[in-house]
Length: 579
Image (cartoon, rainbow, N blue to C red; front, side):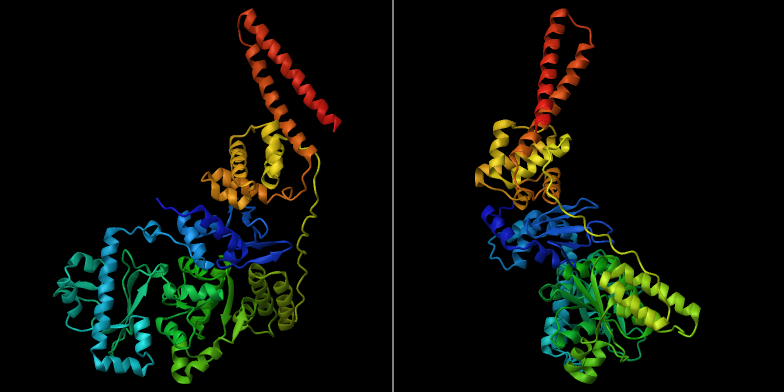
């Protein structure tokens, strides 16, 4: 079992600002004293995730997701609690001492074999490239020097099925070699898939080798590049090239550059831009968008400037917007891809390209307006409708107003005014004594979390709650307060594995009543309401029992209890009325 010292957990949680950590994964916007973001745990199109910097918790008011910094990382990355602690510690550079075996990923033995085959293929192909002078000179001529070749593990698959013979000599079976698509079955037996090609290894986001993109050296070959076929570990639509290398720099900068091809990524790396990946073509998928969002909150698309690249940019960027990412686009009007730019103009030309970054709204107007005849009313109207629809779906109030004015300038049309956003409700302290049992028990819990003396008064005057989850929460608060003399919502979330209790603590901490000042009469009134509720339930039970046949002695005993309960309820009512 994983063991991370509680002192470390508390220290990491106190040092890791929840706004900072969540902003590594999502675009976060300030709203009054709190922050908001699109909730990643449901299909959210209007920011419903509220993040409290003071309380160090988050809460979605649509799907109910909530918790502290650890639970966010745990649920977002779908990892265990110890892995989330380790992850957060790494993000804030906290020196956490832990056993790596405790948190490492458990890999299926068969997939482990496939990974080993690909690792050996990478090592063998790199060795072959280093010992083939003509191939090295070819790559040098394309700017792929020794540093680049080593960093990206570029290799060469020689002809005559040399790779197959090497891997067989290592003891691998034909079945496993075929399963990871380094060999293929032909009428002449098994042969290398990538014979006489330069190999660019492709890894998954965790760094496991998954397959290859392979470039031919034969100028007459119509298939310039071929990729590994779909296998158990290679699903092109679920892989983002270079994600495992780019993750650190992407998180530090808060942005990830996305290109079309492998050589584009390498071109940017040569120019010193290490937070760059590619989607292995223009058909970007939702799975790839999820990986990109995991890398950084801001996704910058840098596809080619031709029609195919621009169409792909629109589709992928829109998909990323819908997934809650902050999106911008590099405007590439030169007709060359990044690899061609760096080979023709050098590093400076490629770095200069990144200065042409435009917002989603600017790209929408350029993309949708590129073929519009602005002298034709119907075309102008359709352009205005589509453009405003896209901008309203992905922009904030400022963007919407700005680009609405831009559309009016471009078309000469007057766009109708949109409804103004609703004002935030005015927050007021509520000091009335709660009437409903749920409100009463939640009031008690809120006071107990914030004020240690409320915990003392609860244990002396009441000591229980009617609802099982609220009762467990109360006992957790009592326990944590006795041990530490205080407790916070974030602390309570870590102190229990009961998901219902965690959700309740998050709900309480994000309730507008949570921050009100301590009022003993309100606390006493809430506890009186709990006792009154329990008494009412007792009265109902006794009333039902009295309807059943029984002997006279038993009836008299029940009747006396019934009358005592009625008097008790009356006393509670009178006490409430006197307040």
